[in-house]
Amino acid sequence: MTIRTRFAPSPTGYLHIGGARTALFSWLYARKHGGQFILRIEDTDLERSTAESVNAILEGMTWLGLEYDEGPFYQTHRFDRYKEIIQQLLDTGHAYHCYCSKEEVDAMREAQMANKEKPRYDGRCRHRTGTPPAGVPPVVRFKNPLEGQVIVDDMVRGKVVFQNSELDDLIIARSDGTPTYNLTVVVDDMDMQINHVIRGDDHLNNTPRQINILKALGAEPPRYAHVPMILGDDGKRLSKRHGAVSVIQYREDGYLPEAVINFLARLGWSHGDQEIFTVDELTQLFDVEDINQSASSMNTSKLQWLNQHYMKESPPERIAHHLSYFLGKLGIDPTDGPALAEVIVAQRERAKTLVDLAGSCQFYYHDFDSYDAKSAKKAFKPEAVNILEQVKQGMAALEAWNRENLHQLIADTVETLEVGFGKVGMPLRLAVTGGAPSPDLDLTLYLVGKAACLRRIDQAIAYIQQNVEND
Image (tube, rainbow, N blue to C red; front, side, top):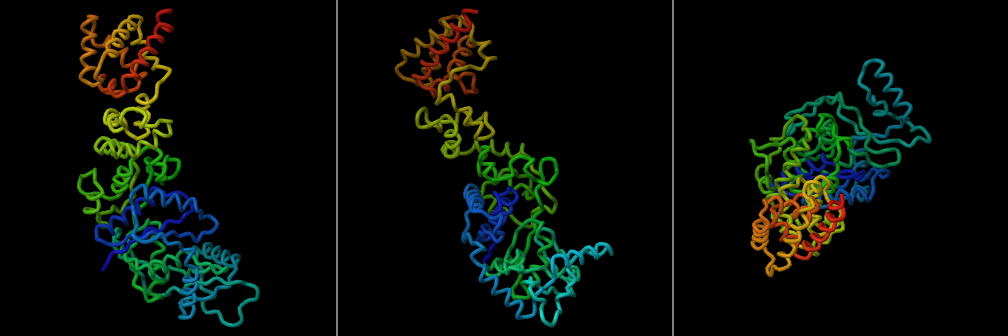
């Protein structure tokens, strides 16, 4: 049997981080078993579904690298098929028309609650005979079995038993003829030959109803795995108050897709004490049955730690591919300056996100007109003018601009002026970087480049003469 899983989001908003985890687990399970992963867009909520949301979902999955083998399939393109199945259920006696008004159903449930009974439809139209009431467009209800039980052999939770007597006759078609979720998902899973459904545990109560519909259609139900929800750092249900809950927001916040994938995989799944996984390792090691039954909590610090790891360990060319977007937002063209890969290697030890890294790279490409105030007070003394003049003369005379020559130039300046290294290094670093965090001084100078260094030293001398020497 070929494993076929699916991810079926509703395009009523962005790709939620919880949905992305479900997609990842479904994708990994299919990949592990050499199966197929299908993308289905459940867009039957015509009022709330938008093209922008569809694009956001597709964009998020592309960014994460969750490529699908089939789809995307849109439910709005399959209405004729749903009507066909609804008619089939009516013809075989597995469904019936219900003419109860909303007010009648509400009154029914209020009476049940007053009697401390479970509120549900009591099936009064199940055996209705005679002429239907005039002017009342009926809904279609599925005729749920009255006896027996549904056993869900859940791959995460184990066996979950539902009594059919506890399940009411759910609506499968509204009064305007449009199908409901529990009908469309059943038809789609059946037609698309989905045999493993991995989804959030908020769908668990839908599962026995869907299994009964599948059996009424003569179809074999898939294996189900209901994944616990994700909680925020504070242990409460994840929401916008916790910060980023959209996959694209994590991209905007400067996280690498491989860090987010690794983080999502560890939200409720583990393999021993291992924390860091490549996609290939996840594909090899992932098993649905290893998913925890309890809810998982977000840990933003862990995500930052993972992101920092991938920023340090990934090839700089790959980091550059993602970093260019953030440099562009700062108005930086990385082709107009030092090689971006070299700058990344120099700066990435200090950054947790691509946003941090982009900010720390600015001084390599753009001049600045101000200095860190605390550093300037300490490094820009009147005597720094002579030191910077000396360095500038040495730089101007250099024929080869490389780290070795720059290192020797600084050492010679220290020896000639008979001062400590800090007396030369501090004002020189501040003059060239403006106070931004930077690596070894000779590497910093090399990457900034000769023309920019000379220009910035002149600017620093002018600043000291105007702001310090005249005080």
